[in-house]
Length: 356
Image (tube, rainbow, N blue to C red; front, side, top):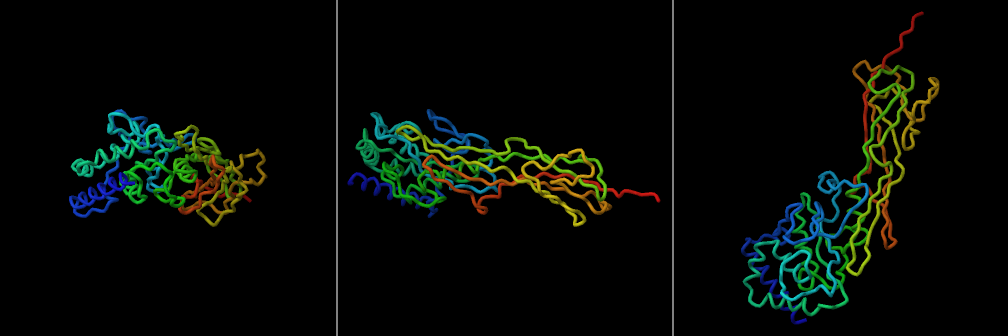
């Protein structure tokens, strides 16, 4: 307890000194996220969006979606289990490293904020006090939890820096026991199925759609004759992906995102039309019967005298998640964007001329 108090007091003094140097800059603005894809020498795998995290997302994914300003962004930082008690401290520490052991990680994390590292380096006895915390846990049965964060337009390191202080971690940057629970999307919530599901949902790639018609796209249609509509998908009709994080004692925590069969609908930019919207997942291909009414399509009631009509076809999915602990749920919109993809085509409609 005395060692923990000493460490906390020393760090609070350092933070106060750093705040003075920064002319009162708030704690959450002190850090700067490492460049995407950058990693310290000797570190482990590099993730383009999860900075120094063990989280991985596999399946039908679009990692760039995390950086999209139009997409919902999950909590930009969290904490995850990383080091076992047997990997708390090793002779020769500290050797700052994101992957070495808990003690080395502590010093590496501090070093991501150069001004803070400089202040800490001038505090007498701090190195010994911090090392003593980790030495005392060496060989224990618990896990050390560490911050993880998202790169991609967000100052994720600043989030993580503020997070560990908000949670009042022992040794400030790591915790030997599972930290307190926030909320389903609260920064600082320990990594669980909900956070993993949110990360998987953010990277889920819905397939683009291509619109087909009969008469074919680019060829004219006629007033009062049905236009058949169907779609093709540039990828799985029911995409799915899984986010997982390994547990130090073996196994992993994971969450899988699944989608329903898509529901296709048709709309046109004119009131002079009758739209058929019994489209299912793919629409309706022309069946060869010129007198048949398509389940999915349009009958235009007037010619496109002022320019082609615009036909818009939209595919909508329902998205759910389940995790390895048996929890499940959906993604409400908002805050999540509606899971849709749209395609369009222009249709020139002519009037059939009759001679009496």
